[in-house]
Amino acid sequence: MYKHIGAPKATKNTNGVVVQPGKGRGTALGHDPSTSSIRLSIDGTNMRLGAWWLEAAIRGGPELLPVVNFTPRTTAATATTTTQEPPGVEQRNSTRGAGGRSG
Image (cartoon, rainbow, N blue to C red; front, top):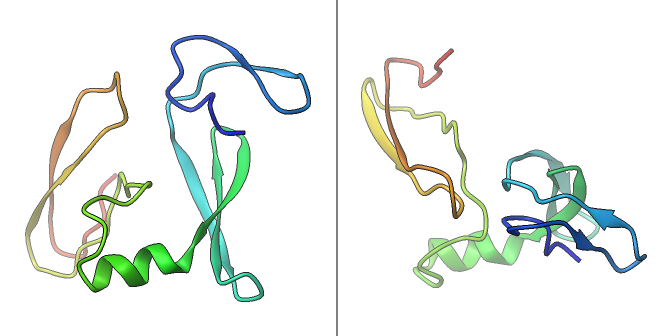
């Protein structure tokens, strides 16, 4: 269903529609308490991330989550973050100042 994300070439979805490859970038649309999930839109495809992923990560479960925040907000006065980019995209290092927001 989501095999276009990070694919080297166009793929067909379950409805037979050709979908161009995506870089794996998207937006969190909000929490859905009825399904205990976070609604996501990644490369134009709507999906959900079960809250259990976050709960398991807090307990030290999975080493990696299936999503990464590319512009994290930090609470420290100065913090350095490293994000793991999807396949084919260079890794970037960024430093955030007070307030955690960058332009």
